Length: 469
Image (cartoon, rainbow, N blue to C red; front, side, top):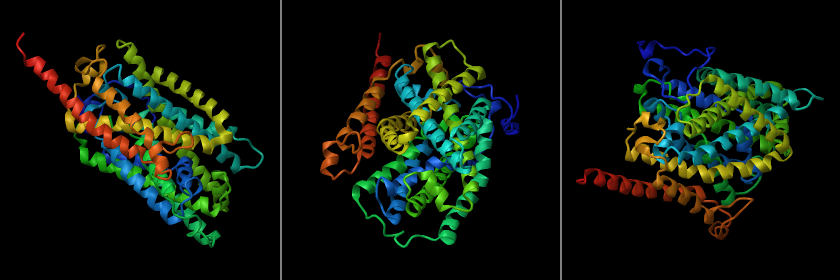
């Protein structure tokens, strides 16, 4: 058997594994790879657009926008990074591991939502990629940009894990200097407007809205994390995996978001890509090309994870099925076509749809991440029977874990009075002047409720097992 330390990353070799556990002799990589995969993945136009929401949609001044986005990213990344240790320990994708909390059939509820999330982010990135390419040369449509981003994304999703890590590493080395150059260019070459620091005023709904946007950006990565750490040696260590993922994702997200805040204030043109071109006039082609490549990396991750999640659904329905790279390729292409269709129909109202999309994700992902982390760290301490994840009856985890499903539903319902969104504003949020505290309430209720219910259920099962027949 090969020593895991002798295995090397092979970006141009087709990955043969899909959702099955990764054997020890196929493990490779270090915690440093987790830093670059999350740092490089976030250097894209969608991150810049999300940062710009703090001054456009949430109407905050520059200083408060940076503070709110920093708080959101720093807090949200804690939950994202806590999932990083699960990959090396268990060697399976995140959605397969979710069977350990929800049961084999119960997990389908969460997996279905996550697949929609992947397709939604994929469509959003395609819209921005098309707009960016159209800005590179006058007179062309957004189709070439969508095609280039799509081809790069699909190729990486087909080749799999190693090529995506390699993509992200290259972007990490290239995009960070370009982002710094763009910021310097905006400040010293074009100059900041006189009201740069004073435009807009502090408002509580906007401040908490921007915090939520930053937190959601990080929490939305929670279903991805194990997918990109599952090939790492089991002795990678929880702390190195946590800190590498935490700082990679936090810095990789926050820096482009701050650039987005600057662009929105310097060139408030309504269209974020047009604003970026105006703000970086003179080096705009370089900036757009680099961030276009970043979009391709992010979309490769969305396609790859979406394919793995879809294969997990198929294997749940047909436990005897062992999907291979052909199945992953086919599913990735199907997801791409669906996302492309959504992008073409939704591009005219992109910012409005995107804001509603990220808020909706926040409400449904928070209870899942609370349940997953409580179960992994506080109840089972990382000890799972991986073979039972793949049994037709769910093994020791059963088909449906009533405690998890109940707490998941509770975690969503308890947020409703605190929601403040364009679609719905709850009574408590209205009384607070439009401040949205829903995700905080969701975490605060779901985590202890699941801990109590799951402990009670486990104690009952042990008492039955020990009782005389």
